[in-house]
Length: 275
Ligand code: KIV
Ligand code: NA
Image (cartoon, rainbow, N blue to C red; front, side):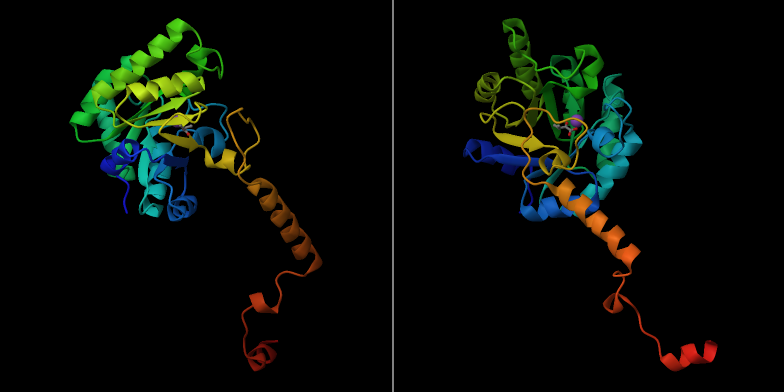
């Protein structure tokens, strides 16, 4: 069954946890979709894990459309959420609506996600008014890495925690149908989840959220540049891949691969004639 804004809201209402994973390509999207994950996020984390940038600041609309469209072609039941990249919505309400529209039309997203609370409430309102579902993203918002001065847990002081609650209430009031809470003390994320009607999706925000999200390369052990405390490795796929690549090298060098079973045949007489 297709996951929609309605089924996800119903999940929160009935106390069923929501699952979300990132994907950036068709094959991975198919695997995640077939596994039954509720939501696939085409995160701007693709800047890090797919393109090798240090942060998400350089990611463009073209990057998001290119990867978003590939994921949308692979997702049948999962809701596909595509991130709005840095400077595609901060600049104005007009830019936000135009760029959210491009992600729907050109990438065939089911929803868009953007970072920020009170300060982007007008953008959220306008995008929602255009008929586009919005996931908000508060707490440690990686596009503001330069303003934060690094990957720092957010909302630890009373004032910061109060601001985070205001952000959560603001994005819900603006019409977001869900909100990602990243890099926030677990008890604060639980408190926020209780104050909101819409589902919260946590990453580094504890088990009290309505759902969880992880970057798939992190949870599969495929990306080792930087591993935050909140990442659990559910498999060591990176090691499995490297071992297979090494075996391929060995078998090609030793002549084991390709063997008869991997070769196409031709009538020997034809070869004799041509020789
Ligand atoms: O870009 C991303 O992968 C994200 C998640 C970590 C929430 O925004
Ligand atoms: Na992101």
